[in-house]
Length: 479
Image (cartoon, rainbow, N blue to C red; front, side, top):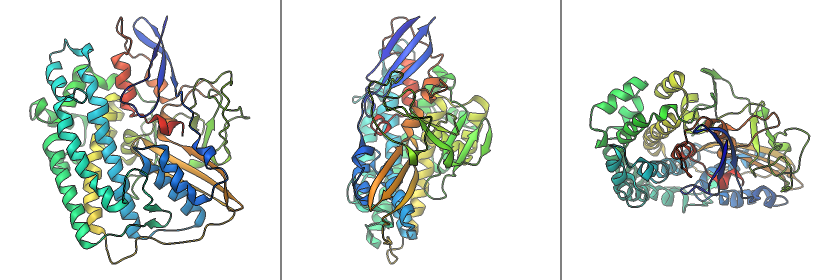
């Protein structure tokens, strides 16, 4: 047996190390390490509750709106406050803009450049992939980055700035819009649709969203040359490398539901849809660098007391579990829980994998952009965008949402008008968790088992594909 430490990873938000045990050219055991402690939960202790809207978004610069939405919902829960329809729509638009931009960034800047690695230089498909997707220098960046920048103008109109907007509040959005601004939002979405249909998909968004099986996806891809669109290009590379067999899922998928009623809330466990009970979420600290507790604790009862001398710890990431079980979160989980026929068929027939995670992420771009077009049309500038209420001096609340990378939850306790406890479980905390007290590895640790490692590889390309298929955000993991 040999031991290989991979990391720090480039093109990943934050610090990450993966320790691998390798035998006969395959990974037999993996430990995923989050090596940086940050302490946002501790910073919030004793602060006025509304300060969460300032602190929480600064956990991360690329998914700050998701943190804002979760914090606002936790406060709204404590205040028993409901936002008006315009507020819901405006926040959905801001949140969706960030999530779609994250998906686009992940595909073009984080995931696809791995196909331009020298390890693949002997493959027949390598020259085209390297020319298109090489990091920074590839032609794909020249197409995608301007389109993303133009798309992000939605943030300026609806959020004032990005990241770390303060427009997202418990009762809705502070930013109203005029009829002229609604027209401009529609124009931005129309331009972004053109980019997606011309470059990413090479087809209408409606057709991408209507694909209903793995066979139909394959037939669609075969209609045109593989380099005619970036989605087809990925499918060609995925087929050549058999990415559908790489990085298997744990067969338990969770989603809190997203954008109101657009994507459902629930669980999908070994082929069956199951209701979601968030009261059975608990965090295990047995293999993390925190003060030991008497068993897992529910988030509202949890603490974040660092202890770098914890003898069995190997990560600053906690180990969240749902009723004691490991679950995967993210775009794949959202779409399989929502019941999209394409993703259901892929997962039921061949399971979660590197291939299915990327397909789900790209499919979600098409679905969400079409929904955004409808939301813009539903805005009414003559109606209120926000409701106001009073914060209780004693109370509690929880805020659940879906970031690009998966399920995000904030739990808030208020005593004497101040934050007495604030706990956060981020998507990558779920996916990159360490082992629990039963010794059960987290989702990524399990997905890495049996990954092939070629002789002499110091940064195994299979490991790179698996890690990036989860699109980790390590600064959110250890907030």
